[in-house]
Amino acid sequence: MTERRLGACLRDAEHQMNQEMNDFARQYGLTGMQLSLVDFLGRHPTATVFQVDLEHEFHVQRSTASLLVKRMVERDLVTRVVAASDSRKRQLRLTPKGQQLVPIVQQHLEQQDAKMVADLTAGEARAFRHALRNISQWHTTKE
Image 1 (cartoon, rainbow, N blue to C red):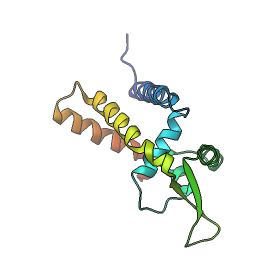
Image 2 (tube, rainbow, N blue to C red):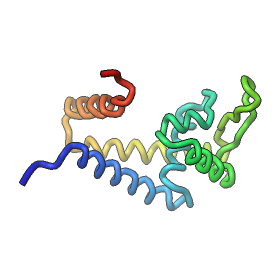
Image 3 (cartoon, rainbow, N blue to C red):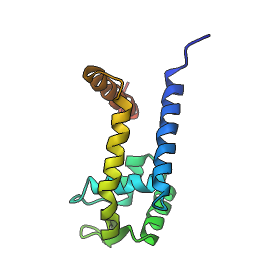
């Protein structure tokens, strides 16, 4: 029997993480992607964040990001504010209701990270993080 390809292992790991995030989010009536947006905005509280930033962060198309933001606005978790720099753009901000979720989401994601490296030594965990960072930046590197 041949050893599984690394890409298949990464795909399965990503699927497992997404499933776990969706399961966790369900108790709040949200999706894992919506909680990921809460985390992203929570980690950038003073930054000016636009929809295009979500497209880049989550590697999604404009229509997907637009629908995500629309649903978050409907749930009173995010607001769209006219940007001071360009009136055609809308800055995204967490509402007080969305801000209440930030520590809950961050704690869950920290626990998820800890589970990933639980059986690794400190050096292996560093190497694992380094390898994942390198892989995630393949599309930005020039050959």
